[in-house]
Length: 66
Image 1 (cartoon, helix red, strand yellow):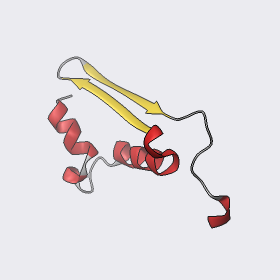
Image 2 (spheres, one colour):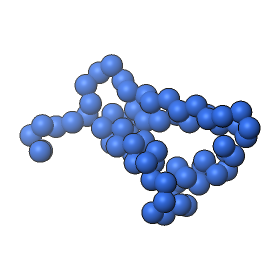
Image 3 (spheres, one colour):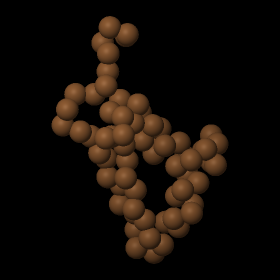
């Protein structure tokens, strides 16, 4: 995948389209802070690698606010 196309997909540039990766990344970052999220590596013609980072510690979730 073209790196610039990927960048647009992961930002608000593609409003309403292809929101799956962006949504997962946003939710992981909301839950785990800067230690969580997606790491995407891509090169044109070589494929795309998506890693999901989740820390070993508990999420930044306050059960009293549910």
